[in-house]
Image 1 (cartoon, rainbow, N blue to C red):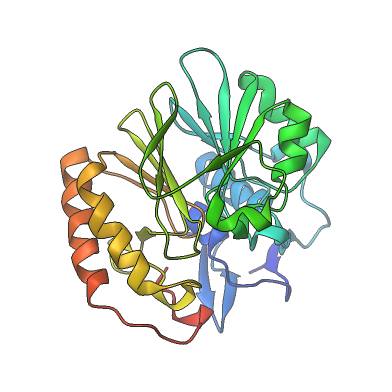
Image 2: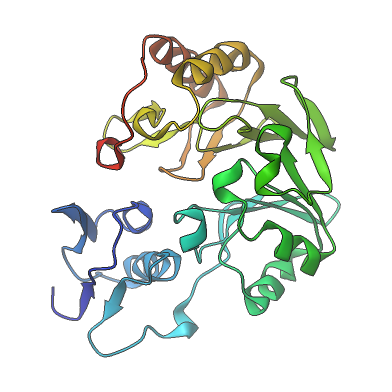
Amino acid sequence: MDGWYVDDRCTNCDVARQFAPELIDEHDGRSRIVRLPDGEAEARRLHAAVFACHTRSIRPVSGPPDPALDPFPMALDDGVLICGHNSTRTAGANSYLLLRPSGTAMMVDTPRWSRRLADRYTQFGPVTDVLLTHRDHAAHGRRYADHFGARLWIHEGDLDAAPDADQVVRGREPRQIGPGVTVHPLPGHTRGSVLYLADDRYCFSGDSFYWSRTTGDLEVAESVTWYSIEELAASLARTAGRLRFEWVLPGHGDRRRLPADEMSRRLRALAERTRLLRPRPVDFTAVRW
């Protein structure tokens, strides 16, 4: 496509397609530009893809993208923003800012580390906590927590990925970690995977489950479940009835907002489907984004 291209560093992580699915699709195992944006709204979505891409693979032929068009952090709802600037050290995972009624914020997983970016994320209020969902997303947790003067959280099952965490979640029972915010241990993707539930509205699911554009439903990434698909099935069976939320906000995979009753129905159905799965070899190409 004249004007823009995707270079060969693309890892087919799906992040760009989440932001601009009408402009970017998948071909031969990587993203490609299918057409130029039409209007300001589509141009903004394209630049969200550009500045989220962890390999910086989406580029204008004229040279580097204009930093003035960087939209991040970008509001998804009145209480949550997506950070953008995904990191190669977290396999390109999404990260979020959860805004609290007190005027503070919590960061869920982390973008690439940059002091300039860190200062940008505090414009919405002091960041009091950095909440890691699991080991794969722990790379920049300590640097962001130290910069913010925030507490760093991780589950004991993945503690070796963040051994200097300030707060260690233990066991498998949910725990309130702040007003309106609860951590739910969900071993499966990794031994120490958790999700964070906020205000019965936002579910930060890490890599435990996500919204699939392919199936139009909640899904688990069974082909990249590192620890145990059986453990993940047991976790979902134990937890699905306890969770009520409108937004699913994963590390990998797409985001979606639905009425809470509909999300609850879909999560229970996902727990039933996952119960039937069996271990399989790791295969990144098999994920149904």
